[in-house]
Length: 393
Image (cartoon, rainbow, N blue to C red):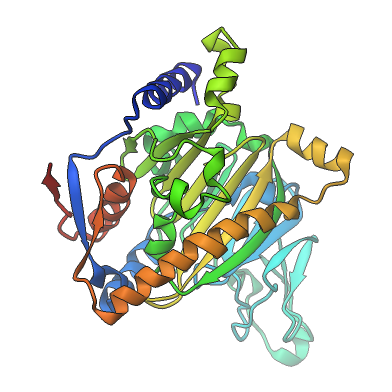
């Protein structure tokens, strides 16, 4: 993020702390409860968002050097991502061209070639079929026509993108995917980060409700009063719509203390005073924390169930700290999960149960929850549905 933009956001937060004002939408919005329970809507979402739309998949450091791979099936399509001997990024359907078996189990590794566990058909990191087990017995095939099916993919600003559709002929323009956020993403220096750990959280909530968990801090002083809440000024955020994407910034509770200790506001340490929350359309929350970036990708597993694939990435300084102290970065998950699974997703599950029971026709998004207004209308816009309207206040 550019320095002038950091200062603009810090000014907004400083004023909000002093006045008690936060960013407001134009009014209250009603969201139909059926948006979280309708199987026909889910089918449309799965086709448009998870088969036709470029998905933010991870950072370049997920494939740190030539010969590394990452197999991931969270989108519902098994994907094999590789970095070939020339350092180029590729993504393939992780399905053998013989009988369709998954070639590589989900996970990460390093090897110059991969072999299907069913009959040992072997492929290189470019997806070429380089060996057929007992080819003379199998019969004649053109190996050049039987490589892994390549998926549209792209790499830029230290980020990886894939369209999980083996039939797509689309190309991915990363700058177009980021839109106005491209400057932010470039400035964070994501190409220098290191992957630390990944976990998958399952919850009895619609995938959009999982995203909504990261849509406001109005609830921090209440739900998180004994965990996350004391670390932040609750009910205070900035509000920037970036096309279908979104950015909001929270103020840490040490904001005034740091500001007083550093009289020159041009020298205020932005990441030590804030938490940046990005929504990357259609399904990713991207958190810029102190020394760490958290990437959370939400996927549907039915109308009332979802998976959150959570990866942690470290700045070079943070990675060095973990090495020197012998600290396992996976320990971060314990605190994170106590909040997300132990508090947020518990509340989201009760909202899901309310929707499924038909208790309320609508749920409300307050004018102090502008990110929720954006998230849901971004999804509606992507599906060509009527946008939700605010009730002016």
